[in-house]
Length: 361
Ligand SMILES: NC(=O)c1ccc[n+]([C@@H]2O[C@H](COP(=O)([O-])OP(=O)(O)OC[C@H]3O[C@@H](n4cnc5c(N)ncnc54)[C@H](O)[C@@H]3O)[C@@H](O)[C@H]2O)c1
Ligand SMILES: [Zn+2]
Ligand SMILES: [Zn+2]
Image (cartoon, rainbow, N blue to C red; front, side, top):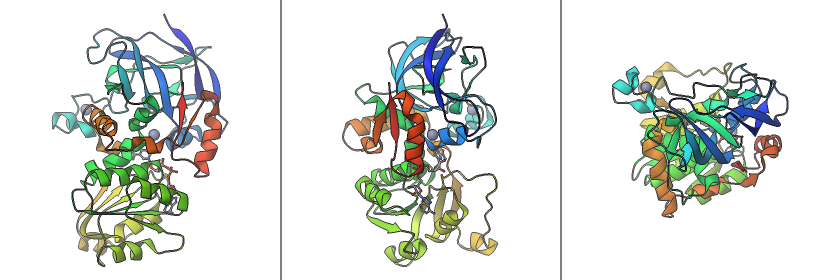
């Protein structure tokens, strides 16, 4: 039977979000209903509320979540009721041209639930990133549920579902950071901080954190940055070059999403180095670079979506490393809050006060 649960909905562009009752259908074929235990507040939720993603209001927000599978629909074999799962927005199809070439991390046709959750009056909701987890329960495609070790705290595990995975993966999957590399990370919020952590995990020799906020630089040091640069007072390109024998870093991760920080990343990397853009630009932003520099400096200019992760491969592995004390995922949980405090959490995120506020249910 369809269930009524409390959830956070954005009804109109720019309007404060509200906690309201929604209707969650029983899972159909290939679907699962998950009882949410924790869900992080991500910048993308705010982008949805501000109409920056699309106009398909009302949105059911929240997408960095962990919980317990409650029921599954026909034909679901990969998860069962009672499983502890992290929700993902890359349930790969196995059929598209990327999947067929053995590159499922780029899947172009990822799965979401086919049925829609609704408001009480029947209005269909658009779940953020096909998840919608600021809710007591949510309906997803079963492939969006990735089983991980239940010994992990839900507040910590859920963060792997988006920003933390995006940052770690930008460094280790997209940037291919390896033992002995020099790395610079520009913008050390939740995503950039995770890129610092991922670089340390991969054995980077030098990790240079750049931000405009000293609080973020202090956190980056805890996560593994060996050097910090406040770019409001120091030219980050000069500073990164000075710290790398005058050459620039092997890999520079841009985790802000602005033309000026991208340009810094471009010139702060060594010849034949790699730039990874993980920050999300807005539609009006333009980038101008001398084409001769693009050519002459060689190397790779890459973008990273969701850290080029494969949830089934990466989530359980990262949770295991965390449980062994080798990956401090707990550092990203700045505070835990109730479902009705998401609007205030947006405010704190906007002021840079937190890495992540996490709704715990
Ligand atoms: N590619 C993906 O899959 C993916 C996934 C999640 C988030 N993101 C994007 O990553 C970006 C970062 O997200 P977040 O959650 O870490 O946000 P955040 O607000 O927590 O962090 C942004 C950081 O950048 C710093 N910053 C701002 N302007 C700067 C500048 N000019 N120079 C240096 N640092 C500057 C801020 O002080 C802050 O520490 C956003 O654009 C977000 O949309 C991308
Ligand atoms: Zn596919
Ligand atoms: Zn997110």
